[in-house]
Image (cartoon, rainbow, N blue to C red; front, side, top):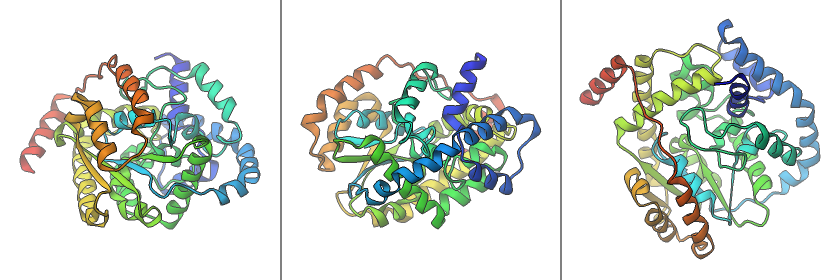
Length: 357
């Protein structure tokens, strides 16, 4: 990968972290000297835009305070690598739905103030594919809100990507556990999303696999939230996530990436904990507000899967969205999935753990 592309991917995936957030991370865990390039990109990019972040806070404070969010967002959940990104891309093509996009998540603290400039900059130097899985992406493509939240708080799952040798610790702390500070930042980010992408739209779309363990949080603020749970073969999902964690850790990690066997063991444990947390809160979701969708159905018959979601959740925008959804499905047909390959020892360890389960 060319140096310019590497820097671009690094900034989009993990740059522009607010200085106070980065300082908090350094209080929790120590970075490695060998990862100084990542540290430099994160810290300098965040420092450069911090004065404008204060300006955005001042200029948009009243609008953010008065912003009224739809009380029935669509929330895409399920373990990572279960088709959540693909479904998010499809649903985000519905012209009535606002969602977090790359032009917001890269630097949400200034994205309202610098919206046209950020889009122009991303269009000029953003790579055409995500470095973690070769999925095509662009400035206006949807993005998981956890990626944007990572710029505003250390209480996200992404902290475990920045400090990959402490992934399990951050997973327990930030996904299975919640803080009031995170709750405030999440609501703030959701309002940023609405102001950034909601003009002329009526619905809100949120995609965040970590929310599989945060159902109670979502319902506390959005009692009418409608959930779509993606389900995929456990071993396939874990294998794919291990590869992504290896690549993402190399891209934005402040510590050397653990070996693949360790990653397998941690990911297997976290997979079970995430789904257990969801099952413990499943009963809180009111009837008619949850659709469970197998990964295979989404991949093989995406249009039928979308129709089912719209019908079962009572979404009224089908007639408006149908053409856009079909166009997005057609666009995705040109995508060839990046092969998932793990070292032999990691693959064997994964097989052993699956047999033990």
